Amino acid sequence: MSQKKQIEEYMKQVEEFVEQVKRSTGLPLVPDQKTGAALWFDQRSLTLRYTISVERIRRFFEGLTEGKLLATRCKKCGTIYFPPQADCPRCRTSDMEWIELGKEGELLTYTIIYTKPTSFAHYPDYVVGIARFPPGVNVLAWIRGPADPRRYRVGMKVRWEIVKREPEGYLTYELVPVEAEQQ
Ligand SMILES: [Zn+2]
Image (tube, rainbow, N blue to C red; front, side, top):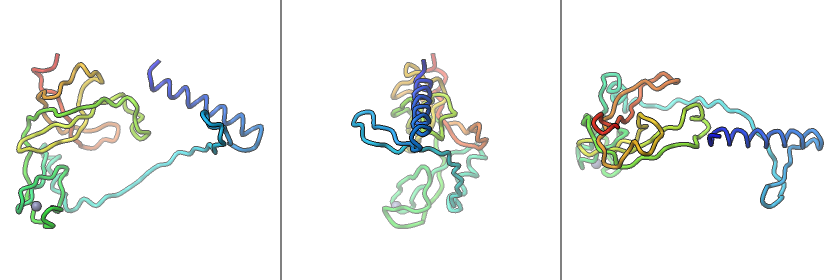
């Protein structure tokens, strides 16, 4: 049984138990498994809608539609920010320029996500990595490929690619192992 199925199975049992207790006592009070202390068990689904102002980094999103991955660089101290920032906290200045990331980089680290946050529960197991791209920018992104640790190696060559994330249907970027290293 997959881990996801196990968790679902376990949660179903917990919910059934709570329902039973609620029917017989009128309260969703259940004992903590370890200590026996009373726990109030309740759950509800929330839909989260949010807006974030991105006006000052709008160029980044234009870049995605042009197939470019863009970072900002502080004109004063040269620090590069990715995801881009409109201000340099070191210099306390907003004197930034846009730079384009090189296409090919090196995988610094990665992890496979088997236990997903609720908002990502609709995805199959996925791989997240950090890769370094010229001129020295670390990019944290999903890695395209199977959730199999044998397929990835720290130091392997990867490129970034602009993709449409489904089911959301918007543009984002992901890391793709360079063909020659894929077995
Ligand atoms: Zn600076």
